[in-house]
Image (cartoon, rainbow, N blue to C red; front, side, top):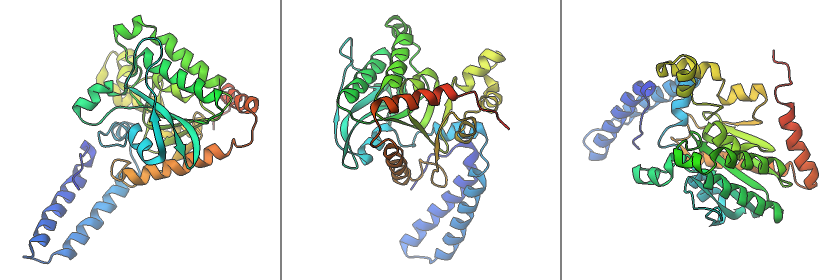
Length: 319
């Protein structure tokens, strides 16, 4: 299987290229070089472990943005049975950057909402690269209210560089739409579980992630601003994005230490894009455990726990 390699993965790319060439020779039946392939594969595995055990924040950003990383619709397809998509905000239009609807997660009815980046050029354009407009957040608010009315848990899958910053979006009330979505998250009397599956960019992410439990994949990121935007503001130099990435503390392990997220979900060796089915299954297990924590709790208790969680942020002393 061919991969799209990141810059820091060049040694891995070279070795896997050699393995692919040797496998073609094996297939031709001319030479038996299975032992050589095994040795090269062992080297690849060793380099993968060495590389991915010490990724810098900037390298984690590159992994989180990888084109082959599974997207919201991939998770829905594997984890949600009988998914019925619901469209439109009942005010202006449909926004394909936010997908959502009703379905069954392990036999229980749920409402699922996700920001979808798309796969392939045409699909990415259709989904606006995961950057939602106001109607997307109003659709999310509508679906959350639906879940609240029928006492259904809400699962949100977050993968967005941020809300769409276009003039048309601002004219239709982008900031208010995000704020109303956050307000709705906090007011829900049903469990709200969010998973950061790739990028969690600014208000565009928090609009769906003001949750009882925030889960985060090991190589995903979650931040108030992109490193490029931060560098442009602080230093008037977008080339210092790597410095900004270090300062922003946007990795899963940093955010777990800071108490911003609740659970870090390990990814397969080499990142989620190498074994999509495996990581989606792991997310399913984590979601199941997170939802079970709220089984039997009254709606007011669920709402109060969520409120207390966010009020406590920033109050803990860090070592």
